[in-house]
Image 1 (cartoon, rainbow over the protein chains, first blue to last red):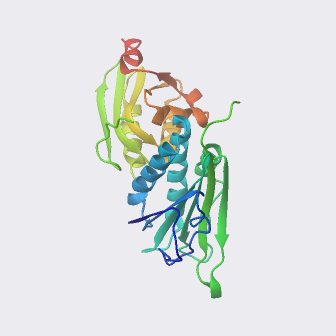
Image 2 (cartoon, each protein chain N blue to C red; image 1 turned 90 degrees about the vertical axis):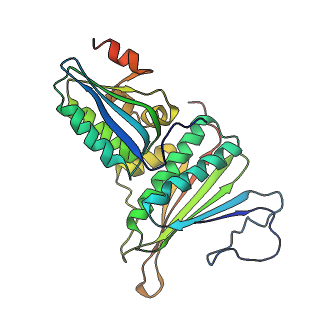
Image 3 (cartoon, helix red, strand yellow; image 1 turned 120 degrees about the vertical axis):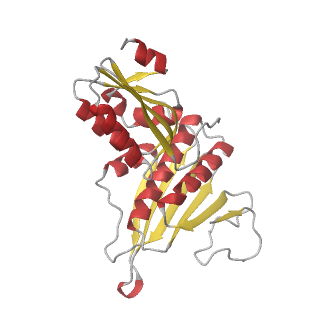
Length: 160
Length: 120
């Protein structure tokens, strides 16, 4: 597993072969943390521990920490299910003062791989996150698509 | 946050008691896609018990994912009139139950003694 902590990064070094993050170089801007693991369920506990840690350090309230940990687990479990064998799961956390944005993605195992949004898990994810969307980017030349989930979680639960 | 879980990704499931009055299933660790099947097998044992009162002690569960919630919800439906009693001291369990509205399917107790007392 690789964990990249980037903040106030100078220069144009790319720490992964995927996109460099546009916000990573902004002085005083949000912190960006990227976790890459094999796309296997066995490593999801590690990713959700990172989510929990980031939320705690960002002063999220206890319910919001719990929600983010569960949302990240849900998103990663969903993606690992549709990932091609022996590929990577990439999970990027962008930590703002009042919220954390998470973008998780994998290479789909088949040409029609996608995130199912008619499941119990997806409904739970919608409840846990303040905003969530499934993302699908079609591969070049009929190659497998990149399948992802982007979610946003605010630091505190607004009064109902 | 204090953690009493064994190793992440491992779940301890033990049917500690099973008599006419009460059956008690103790669960320890993290309930996610890796371990939901273990919980499912434990629930089957619990539901097979001839007891009037069915208790699942989740006080030492440190994570509960939707896959685990789904197992608990299915067990609640299968239990029918014998309403499942959950011991849910930890936020890691209480919060998912609350936020999904599934808490109403169970009787919730803060500690094991309270859940069992009313059975004796």
